[in-house]
Amino acid sequence: MAGAATILVADDDRAIRTVLDQALARLGYDVRTTSNAGTLWQWVEEGLGDLVITDVFMPDENALDLIPRIKQVRPQLRILVMSAQNTLLTAIKATERGAFEYLPKPFDLNELISVVQRALVTQPPENPPANANHHEAPAFDEPLPLIGRSPAMQDIYRVLARLMGTDLTVLINGESGTGKELIARALHNYGKRKKGPFVAINMAAIPRDLIESDLFGHEKGAFTGATQRGIGRFEQARGGTLFLDEIGDMPLEAQTRLLRVLQEGEFTTVGGRTPVRADVRIIAATHRDLRQLVAQGQFREDLYYRLNVVPIRVPPLRERREDIPALARHFLEQAVAIGLPRKGLHESAVARLKAHDWPGNVRELENLVRRLAALYSEDVITGDIIAAELSDGKTESPAPRQQAESLAACVQQHLEAYFAAHGGALPASGLYHRVLHEIERPLLRLTLGATNGNQIKAAAVLGLNRNTLRKKIRELDIPVGRGIN
Image (cartoon, rainbow, N blue to C red; front, side, top):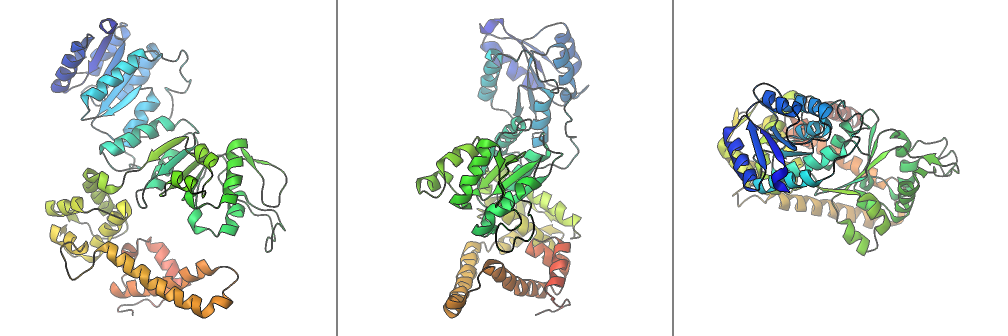
């Protein structure tokens, strides 16, 4: 019966205490409220309460430091944590310390009531995990692995926090540029395998005939050119995490071998006979609809279900516009860290950024911010500058998406001419990397010319690390100086 349950509420905000007191009392609960952690601890020690609802930051103590003590004396007591410090690290720390649920502020009252009811009827474990109260938790002052406080990101934070102590396979789905690899890295860096390696492989960037060797390794003599044993990504990631990006582009024959690894927990190298244990956590990602690929016969249905144990959808930036200001300021700080001048954002600039649809998502925003920091002398970026960069309202300039299509059409025309001229004499292998190499040199030359030879600005425009740009300049023998053409 609801009236038999006593709920302890601790929050230094009187308005929140009043709202929770009235709402929960109307449902028949006995509610006790306090503004400090000391009184809450006293009640818990006295054996009062069937459920605790607490804010994180209170005048006398951080509730996340109090939770382990509560769990030590009352291991069965359920604790709901609320916080305006609604970041991934807060969610992780609350979960690791033993909270039943984490809710960001401002909270939805109906959702909170639903969680309260679920907490009171869910049977607590008789023997909590031995390390639940002693897990090494991340500090609040370390850099945030993910940026954003929108409801969509809060949902992701809560899912990630629940997954940190598991080895469950995760499938991340989202448009290109949404940050799928960042989420995979967060799962690794704050999970139980964080001391192991994080190995990423992009299925779309590997020739089809090399994928199996790249994943599973090969024995000496397994194929032409295999002069020695090759270590695959599964062995490289032993004890850690293997991130399979663009899994939708994996060939069917490689899908069959990956399915066996997920089913049996072992694999054989190409040309090998002895099974090797696969001691890795698998995280996969794709921008494609795998269910549609299954229907089209391009992706194995049984592999899809093996990968889709925990699905995470990363929202496009247009669905989390409230996160854009924080993301933009974060990228401005990153620009300062690589030697670019410090910039501020005018309110009009923030408004322009939030109004844009961002077809390239977070990656497009990051590249824009780096370009702004590198190419504009103004200390404060205005809305007019943003509008000019995004071609907003310029009838004489095509929109960014049209420009991308025009560039693709240009490249396609040149490739069609190349195939027409060399169709009968195409190289046996390596065409993909050869084309990229030949495009790379003029791209770097033109960019350096546009920035008058300023490598810091050129690296920002290209979205490359400055050291990476310098390495490529040396490798491609590109002359460096002002007015490069």
